[in-house]
Amino acid sequence: MTIRTAVAALALTLALPLAACGTTDSATASTSTADTSTTATDSSTTTSGTTGSGTTGPGGGMPAGGEGGPGGSVDVSSVTTEEELVALVQDAYGDAGLGLHRGHQPVEDVLDEVLGITHDELHVRMDSGQNLATVAEDLDIDPQELIDAMVAEYSPAIDTLLADGTITQAEADQYLADLETAFEFRVTWDGEEATPTYAGLDA
Image 1: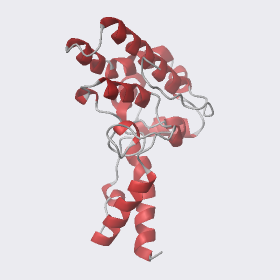
Image 2: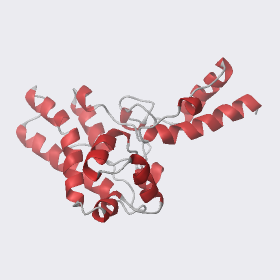
Image 3: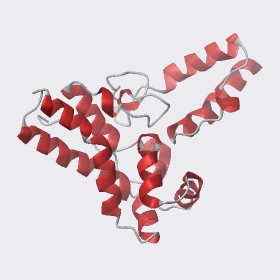
Image 4: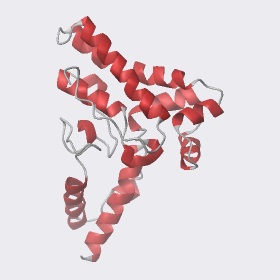
């Protein structure tokens, strides 16, 4: 392994967790030469693109087809098929590979608004072993309030498919319930339980 390859791999290792929480350091994430850029691209191809269950999201490249590093999300506003909605619900569970954080990027705005603390403070709390439910309780916030806010952030995708006739009202209600289940898992995760694989309403 050349020094350039080692440096590129190290840069990628440092950049991905930062991107997953919605923060990037351009100095860390960027590469200085075509060689290191190519190596970083090759490395990301082999290390990403699967969820914890070993399946690739419909968008490819990142878990649940998302963008922006491990734990990246399916863009709620771009969901136009039921397959993408299934991927969105799976994304709501988060990425166990990121520890208690489970990838904050998709819901960072919700966390900031509901918890009322800085993202750095949230990291300090979670690095000490608190899950999102415990953080909320320490701040005198009902964890259900956090779950409801996350569901509200993702539910417009369900509304879109209901409005265009892709799913029925009964199916929309079930997807909404499944979305709440996924976010409840994310908020209360104990750090050990395996992340469920969501395969949709027919599973």
